[in-house]
Image (cartoon, rainbow, N blue to C red):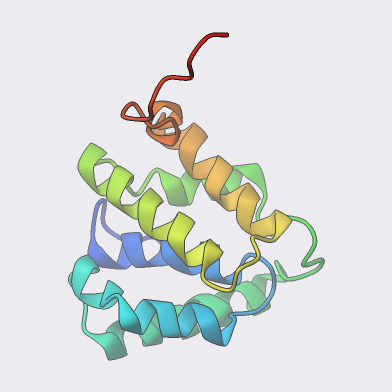
Length: 142
């Protein structure tokens, strides 16, 4: 797969594309969510640039034969590590993880393959703490 400059809008958009395409298809609800939340603007891209990047990502996946079984993550560990390494900025990592989680939930079903991409992001970026809310109320002991 092609590489993008570290922390570039294209590198960030590809992580989003990984999430959207992990289960083998891009659900219309995911595209609607992208539009409704102005994700292209949040990433510093035009809408057409984001959609073009998503289409290019899908073409790349087909060319390298990654879409084999939609029930498992279509990306090997090395590929995920290489793609995740293109995002180095801690604030961008946190923001992008939040976008990816919301995108995966947009169709009201998080596929196993989508979950695998999210887990890879958390692990590669060291964001395990970001998954635990520190402002959650404590449970009363009984």
